Length: 439
Image (cartoon, rainbow, N blue to C red; front, side, top):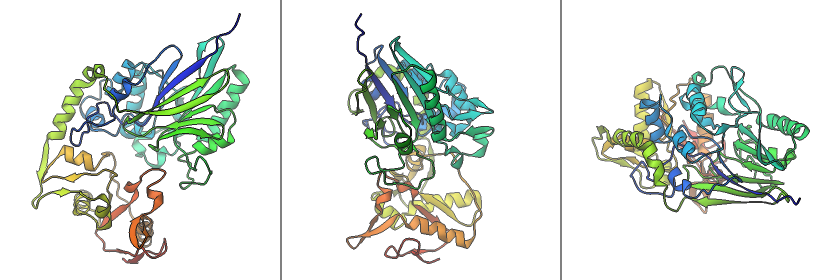
């Protein structure tokens, strides 16, 4: 009997950050984003997999209001994922921002199988070591999920007590070796909440090699990875890295990764589908109560500015000349912490404050509500820190501009900090490391 050839389809989301509706929380403007729009693009059959690659539970006002008021209920994202019939899920680093108990509840409430294999809580793995998905008895693939091991470098210690984070590269190599020895599969799919530390074409490092992102190392040094769904960096990628077909999507559900994979020939084709169509309105009733509570929360007034607004009209100038909004935010932090100095960055799309400040203004400007740290440092360390911040600028065609490493492979304007409580001068024309000329 002739065996029918098998071509499978894979849809993948990543870094959705609690974005369900297509309406921007800062001003209610409809955008090409949101799970409701992506849902309209997905066409599932028995040869289709639908996968989420993490960073779901934090990043939008809806996420935060759920944490404040509805934490005992099923998360709105989990409701939508279940309604959309997701098959598999992976955890991202932002999943832990509200504590690991919320992560376990999210996993429990999801119908999809958790793949995260390198994170453990008191020795118990959050996900499966690997999963064998059988389309029919002749067509099986293995799925392995991993999350960046760098989480302890960001997360509040109280949120990750008794957790261990295994090295992503070592774990994946061991798992793939095991799959090759034990399983009869036609291919291996890796779902990795992490990105690429090197240029996919040249192999030249694009960031400090800290281990936060290990996608290039895995694709270049581990044989047998047919497809890798990556994330974390919010880049738009659909290409090959060595012999691996790789994808990555932008944040806030702006696009969907789509892969066609012929399991007989191993031909793989990947592309990104933009969320520029209609919305799946059937999802809205699932989240309506919490969405309305979020809008009410955003419209609450917090106070008035005495001398007009603090809106940002030119983001580059706001960093170059330290917009009054920056000093205002630093003043708030100084008042709260009683520290000597305060440092704050402007996020990539910060809007600033109207004269009457609402919570909507606040969350549009200061995106993440999780962590305010007080640290003790010497004057020497302060200068080294400011020198690092000063690397944000360069001289191009006789003018000050943003250094390329803060623009690609993804915009990282949020890595330029500005300090109040001390006076300092940056001389951009000086070499990197010697730009703070007075302090």
